[in-house]
Length: 331
Image (cartoon, rainbow, N blue to C red; front, top):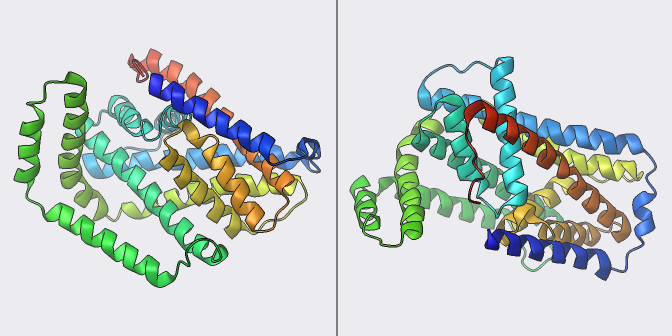
């Protein structure tokens, strides 16, 4: 609780520092030429979240070997789970939303906790991988003058190393991790024991579930939905720029969006507040855009994040009444 509050205060401080240290004309924020694009940005932003939510059905189908239809009821539950996941992302330290989403999937769709943890961990890995690849490639194209010249060869070597490490991870005998689980059971501190037990159990489950998930052809719709969700969400930034009468190449928006999300995750600050804004402003200004407009876009994007927070809270109340589970208890 104290860590969450501290990180949130740090994020707000960074955000305010960005607002007042760039010598920016705040009146630009209100010079919107086409307000309809702001409304469209909000709609597109929610559509991106909705599309990402549908992946749960395919994951459950693969792991449980049962056909979970996309009826109105199930689709509503998928969307509710994703909204609560976004609520956790924006108000809790980075990655706390992953185990929360696992609990939600387990409770709502009757999936075992082990499988739901493996599902959400893989979903997070897919999103992170797509963001990394998109950000890395596009960053290397548009920001060659920054720091280090990234080439496609560097990217290839990095991906090869990651693949080799993943193969090594799955080749390690399960007995090695089982011994770790036994060692964890001897830890005296209850909180530390619980954390390490969850980590080791997740690793064991990932080793058994991920190969089944990754080798199933049903992964193709999941990957398509993942990429579509990221691109559609990035389009919200494009629409806000258009509201100010400025066209920005879509690839720029995707590149900056991917890098800002990665930076926000590294910062551990809830929702990447402050760290994402300063990344967005710095990169777009580097590309030659007017800082006043870029700041306005960054602020509007942060305002858009209030939508999943509000809707996520409403979904959380409904979920609590329906399933009797409060996933935020004690956080």
